[in-house]
Image 1 (cartoon, rainbow, N blue to C red):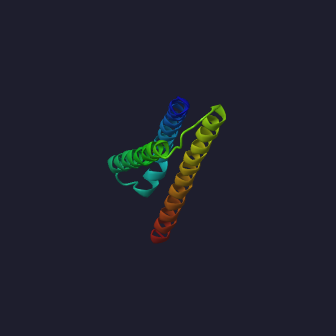
Image 2 (cartoon, rainbow, N blue to C red):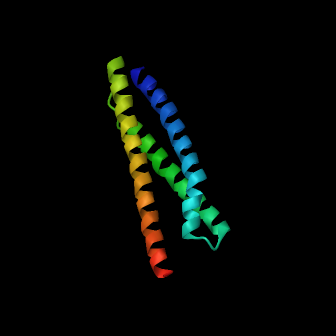
Image 3 (cartoon, helix red, strand yellow):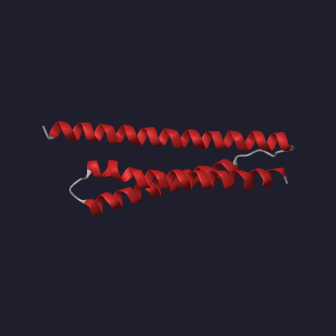
Length: 117
């Protein structure tokens, strides 16, 4: 029963966070993708949609994997510890993905500006 409580709590928080952050990245990331592909707005939109799909697949996949590796939880303290640990992991993954994407976009934009000079 403790595992079921942990799974439900984890899934509610993780799915909410994944959907919210994904929506923000999609909404505001369009500006960065448009700087890379300014000549084709339709392609920019499609690339942004593909990035969002990849983001969802990776994070939902990790969320499912995280549940599959949980040990049996025996009390409320185990539930809280396990949920918080797995939430911390997925938060770190989200942050790392964001900064990696920003780094790649920055590198692409710098290379593009060098070729336009």
